[in-house]
Length: 482
Image (cartoon, helix red, strand yellow):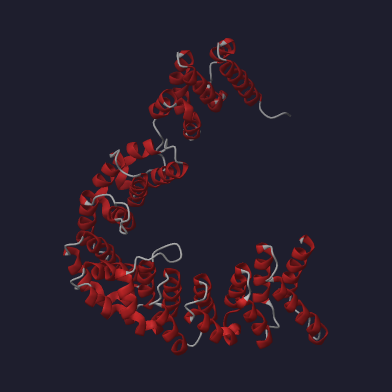
């Protein structure tokens, strides 16, 4: 199998190599044979080999209708993995695979076919780019399928058509508002809202009308789609600005949240939008199980998106960090938003510094980035590092990571506060203090005698740690060998 895999990779290299002038006739037969071998490799038991074959087929210079027919026959193969990579190959080939479009239409419309195959057929259409007039009826019909995965594929394909998918807007709007079926990873409704945003200006009148719908689900879907549209294509949503501004007073918090950030995207009117987002952070309850919309998280992230103009929201974002009942996700969002607001958020630094000691490494990294954006010269206070060593000794590695960012004066101050911990009655604290002093090194004049005393500690782990720390400090003091 390894030999076969090597052969496919070699063919991939051959397919990407330019043919020398005048050598076309000499290579025609071998090229045809290479493509046939690659198609045969789509049936290989190793997924990695099939994947390499897909990539090589996409670059092959000799693709003919017969090649497409060979690949299309694999769409009926008994092995799902083979069928999957055949779909991938057609998608990779792009417009050259148009002879396969009728078969893809047939698979999409076959309600007895494997739902995953029908989804992949929709994905293949995205790569190929079929005639819109032919594809629209097939895809719109698939929007009514019982299977969420199939509906999801049809929605994605229609969104990829952009403005040409205008006739599908009413159905997509209904799905965006009401369809919570699970598609590929996210709900079908979520993908439909993204598709409406990609359709752009032709769909705006329908979305504006939906902002006034009596059913809140339609207002939410329209506001969310327009929000996405103002980010990706603000010019297309220009005629929606007035209705979105009016929606800032909607009775539903989901509508207000999306309308606020959409209005900001379109107008940069912080005076009108930031108070709405601030109030949503204060008043929105946490999302419950099974709820689709995370209003508080959206509002927090949106304040970060507004940036320095969201200065008035700094107090509420600090409250989010301080609130112990806040989810880690929202706390991270608030820290990041404060960093995006920038220097005006200096009052938040003490709270952000506390996040540097989070057991979640991503959270600690977010806090480090946010602190640098607010004040590049600011450092975690020495007292906070000592507190971490003394009260959370098991996680001393986190404290060490932070102390390595301190300047020389701060490190010297840290030594004077850590040395007394070497006599602590808690062995975990003594061990953490030894490790911290080792990390500080001789640059901060670590008292060697204090570490020597610990070589006679009752705890073997502490004795070993003291010996290791002394060796490391002495080695660093000597410098590299000459």
